[in-house]
Length: 177
Figure (tube, helix red, strand yellow):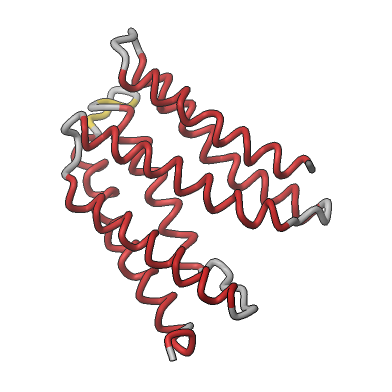
């Protein structure tokens, strides 16, 4: 197993760790959880950089990387819904887009085609990660009340989720024919 895939696996291993700190009544647990989520989210950049710079892209990495991203974001969103911090409706929108595009990519792969991540998809991922970090962090960040800003970022991520899903389908519509 190459280094990039090990970094991706580390992201998956960090998921239950950040969840434990988020759900258990641990002093400063939400802050620790936000830091762990941030580290996990940043491994997405790191594993891609390692794979490209060391020319270590692999079939396993192409499978694990998007899976790790979806697991991380899904776990965070579901806990935030459970805690009553966000509504389930935008989470359903986000997860529906992820399932749709994953299925879409599977159809493309079965036909020997690879659908690369779009700029919209990358921006969507960054916005989702920032929103999740802010929502986990809580009301104040460095003395600044951030709850309203966190919700604005979250809903922006939902809009970008919809736009990126439409973009994927539109640019690859021939896969449906």
